[in-house]
Length: 332
Length: 258
Image (cartoon, rainbow over all chains, first blue to last red; front, top):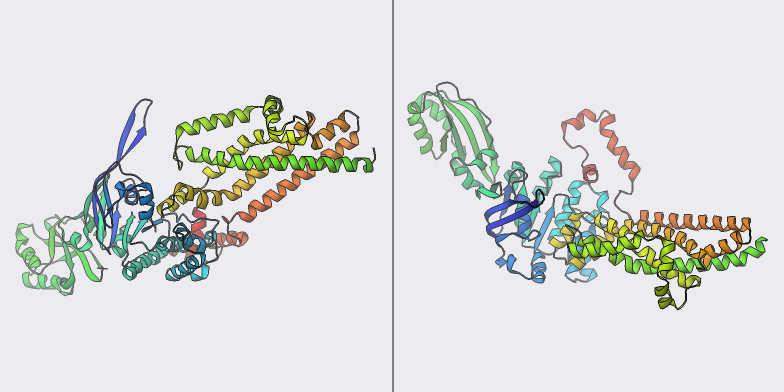
């Protein structure tokens, strides 16, 4: 649905007189977002994720590379065609960007005014959308009278006004408190399911990825370091994202012991593998850290355990764990 | 000179002043508004960023603004005659008034428009709006309260300028004050005219402020309640509970962050 290939964006910064330095905000980004999924791009500030999402609807024009949304190459479009295409790409912003002098309903109607819908059709559509985001009773209020979460719901309703296939979310929950964040994310998830909306979101919070995304990409210094569905990431040995999603802490390895990171998902979660391991091989297993979550309806967990003795002494128990369908990494 | 003598003269002069200020204001809005928009949008990072145009228009505006009004009146006499066919009376005074006020207003418009949150421009662009749509749907409506304040300031400046124009035969209250108050030593009449100008300016200021406030929806209507709510979590026994749940005042965070 959204594909970027070899996307580059270079900013020229004026240094000392006469000299310009070039800063590559995007340094060859390949992103592939499938239809109907929620795709999260995560990274620290300055990693280039904001530039990336702004390149997807060409609010920022990439220096080179291609951006395809729903089969159309955006960089090749004329200004008029680009405006037309943007109508089918909704966008929500960190600071909501609602017009202060328009009521909630008028804000939602704004995109429809651009498409030349009649007043009555606009009002009907706005009512329907506000119903969808749970703000039907606030139609006549002004943005200043709303809470942050309500403002973002209006932003989402406005983004949906053009019946978009794609929704871009630029740190939509970063200005909200944790509880409101949860409810806004839930709304995005519901919209994704109900309307088959493809959502590309950027965030710096791992929790956002964990709670709504099907797929994720990690960005650093203008590059995508790692990407894939959450399940793929968890199965991938040494995945940085998996480690970030399930932080197990910095367990100091005990002298003369072996530290294992075990990832389990699906059927494996139901197995009492720790006690089986202890019983079968007569080893004392200590649990250093563990986390279990539900990702996309599947139970997924990670656990860091310590076995006495060096790695060589534990080859057999490790083999046993792998046989059980668990993914085992030797941490130390 | 009795009040009965003054009244018809005052009435006549007030109308002349109102006409010249009114027409000059109209011309100022018609020309100054687009000029201000052009200045704001050709700025660096603006909608139609264009350093050349910005510099050119900026220079013209600066020249217009730096000419003292009295000199401007004299300097553009040929232009005034070309437009109105005369160089005397309120009709003639309208021309330099407008010429003087247009660059002044244009700068104020520039500031008001540039103050509109860039995020709104982006939001309209992201939904497929053209540059003109951005101006029409976001920049002008959102800047309206500030534009009304700018216009108020401009009208008040125009009333002042009109009195100056009056001293060189521009008609209106200024001419009256010079002809009677100064040349005929009618000090009382001078004070009456001064008082009327004070009242006029005050009325314009009050009307402008009221209109600007009425158009502004940035602050919640219940401002006093809002402040009350804000202080509650830190002052009452609700404080420890509030500390447990981070961000206990969701209805406030949005406005507080803006």
